[in-house]
Image (cartoon, rainbow, N blue to C red):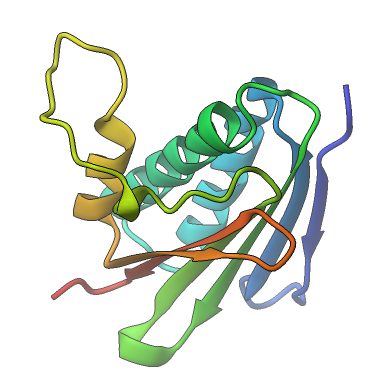
Length: 154
């Protein structure tokens, strides 16, 4: 199994301001990425509920990359970066870069949510728990998904 590479830049007295992870699209990496993002958010002052919501959103976004962008191929690259910005009272900005089919989910027809059918919950979580979610098709294929959450929500 490929290694998960963590790259952080900080000193020992302040929380890290940036976190980068390089993983493959193997489902076994979901928990590692989620825990790293949750630890990063916690270290940067997000409360317990926000940490859990941010972690779940990242988990769902990567699961969507695996399922839709890579159609289940477990060996494709996923680059995850998180950065703290002091704008708006402090906010976390998380980017997820894939090199898959590059379809913006906002361009697809919305289907009614049916709790008896699998799927469809990830996008709902992203819309409710993040302050901004954007999808940017990338030159040469793939998508850059950006998730932003303020420390103090309006």
